[in-house]
Every structure is written in C-alpha cells, then in structure tokens.
Amino acid sequence: MAGSTSSPEFTAFLDESGQREYGLKTDKYFVVAGSIVPTATVDTYEIEFNGLKRSFFGSTQVEIKSNWLRQPKEAAAHYLEPYGISEAKLKAFTEAVYDWILATDIVFLAGVVDKDQMKAQYSSPHNPSAVAYNIFLQRYQKFLVSHRSKGSVILDDFTGATKAGNQWKDLLLRQHSSLLKNGCPYTRLQFNNIHQDLLFKDSAGSSILQVSDLACYNTFRQFKDHGHIWDDPAAKSLPVYSYFNRMLPRFDQSPTKVFAGFGVAKMPTVARHNWLV
Image 1 (cartoon, rainbow, N blue to C red):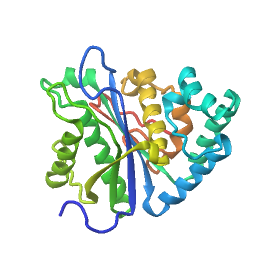
Image 2: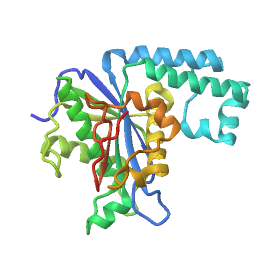
Image 3: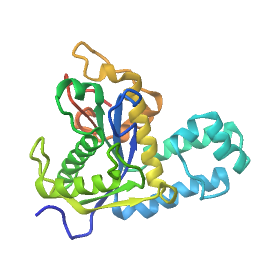
Image 4: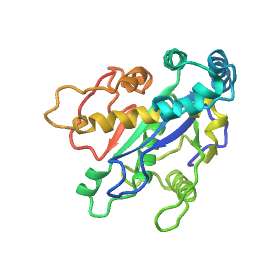
C-alpha cells in the first residue's frame, strides 16, 4: 500500500530554486532540495535555531533567506537596519548557522534538472518542476528504506500558475498523489515509505524551511557556477561553490562518501562521476 497512516519518523522540509518552466529568460537549472530531519527532533532544532537568532538579532521573528544574506541591499533592508546590527555581526551569524548545521544530524537531499539537456534529449520533455520533485522523492524513498523508516513531506508554501493557467500547488499535489499511487514513471520505484499527505507551510514560521532555503540555493549556485563539469566525461575534479561546500558533509552520501547520485541527483545524466564529499 502506498503511504502510511503511522506517524512518520522523518520529515522532509523542501524548497525550490530557479524557474519551474522552460524559456529563454529562465535559469538553466531547476532545483528541489530539502532538509531531512528526525521528526522527534524538529522542535529541538527550531528552538536551537531560534536561539541563534535571538543571540545575534535579539529576536526570533527574523526570517533567514539566502538572497537576503547574500545581497547587500537585501541584507540592509531585512537585517542590518531593522535589528541595528553591523555587517560583521551578520557575517558572524552566517558562520554560526553553518557551524550549527554541521553539528546537527540533518541530512540534505537535492533533485536537479538541467533544462537544456532535457530539451536536447527528449522531444517532449516533462516539466522541470515535476521532474525535480520526482528526483527528490526517489532519493527520499531510498533514504527512508535504508533507515527502515517512514517519512512525510512539507514544502515551503507558494503561489502562482503555469502559462496555461494551472495552479502550481494543485499540480504538485496531484503529482505527489499519483507518484504514491502508481510509482515513479521512469524507474517504477514504489514510494511505500512516504506519507500520503503533502503539506505546505510558510517558511517565515519554520526555521528548518529556512535552512532548506540555504541548501536549495547553494545547490542551485553549485550548478549555475560548475554544472557544466558535473557530468563532463573528461572531468577529473569538481570545483565547489564555497557555501555548498560548507553544507556538503550533511548531504546524503554512500559509505565511501560519494554524494553524486545520493545527496544530489541530476536529470538527465550524461556521464556518471563518483564525486566525493
């Protein structure tokens, strides 16, 4: 039977980076990435992350977003001016966040779609959003099986519609239900360990979703900067975006520390490299 009525032992908190459709003015890559957290420790991690916020900002209400941390105007508008802190203190907070992440048992998973390769390889390529979510769910299912566990999924809430006028959220809900009922259309993998309900939550009220935002953007940036090397048959080494590298030890990996195809899976795959943590 697809799904489970028992309490999930893990919860996946998901975010997205890039545009969900193909188009000349869209990003080359689309990413779905998430933080996999033992459900019993979610509240503890929320308390710990809020403690970091309180220490540096004097408030737990501040929302952490990757683009707000990176872009000077956004940083000033959302952090420096409202909370009266210096750039140096914001940088120290950022470093403290990454140190905290490494100290947790959060596991990151990411599904990446190369739009150009999809269009080159398939005459009618499936939507990047649907493909990336499928890739993520495949990795999550395999993670849960390896831990003999069940899991649920929470996605950062969003609005918007396709060019045809279909609501993205409705499409994703239908896809989630179809995958759990029928299995993966590409691999026939059955998603028996994943809970039937796909939930949505505003990231402003979830520190772990905010951590997922960091993981998702850092994965996106890794591919934006170095995606052409990921499955280049001639590549011998992989350059790594600095903040992706900071989080890399917490991405799922094989016993031999291979994260390509484990913590980060890409579609299509041109050449397979055993990129190591």
